[in-house]
Length: 357
Image 1 (spheres, one colour):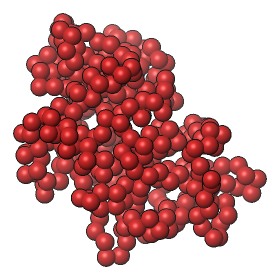
Image 2 (image 1 turned 30 degrees about the vertical axis):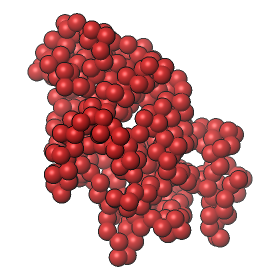
Image 3 (image 1 turned 30 degrees about the horizontal axis):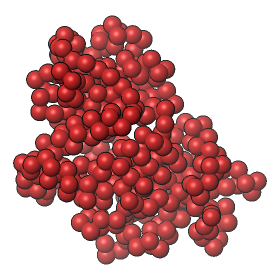
């Protein structure tokens, strides 16, 4: 059932994402909006909520004729370690308010803030979109985004990569590695094993396996897994989304063996090739924190960093939430986690990571 949210503007409500017609209607609105992202799609809200045991609230604004005038996906993320937050969009690097009418922005923002109070979430994070209002803190220095047009073919793609990184890619292409894409249970298991080892090595907890399977299920043909193997053993893998002509390599990583094999370089070049066959025109390398090795890696591929603008509102007396592993206060925990046996990290990690968002 659709739940009324506020007493005043009757045009604001929480969408019923269990209704296929409602989902299709919202999906069409997001698809047609120039600033829409896959993180605005109902499929994302449903997948991350189900995959991490959290709760989604999808705000919609409708005009007098009943047509959609704006949307705002929200995920209620509860964590005993990091506190509760309402995020737009949870577990995504993008989100925020989508509308063609600036008058809708403060209405949706206030609806989100009211909902946060009702759900006892002292913090609301908005990852992109227009400024929700003067009460919101703006952060446009912490994160960088990396998006670049795909070249016409392999030769042009290789030529577009700066010289030093291009040499690494050439060596990777010469290595005896097998590359395959898919999304069957075996592919999902292989990807999760690689990704879990990769994030353990970085000192961070892994997300629940169900998050990946739910995203692949909800996105259907618009998502897949690309795996690089050596001698039949997966060494690098990435789960990607395909939406509106853009490929989003979202969860990727490699085992310790991947570095010497240059398997990650091979993985991303092969993904560029694969994305072109799917009709993609752009490659979104995702978000990285300013000044990190991940940001430098993407610059080495010829991607120009663009600041990402996020917004945050914190209830009076509450503290802002910071669950980032690069925060110096977590340095000891990161070092300890990177030394854990993999089976322990894989058991304990999802219990923590499902509350990161």
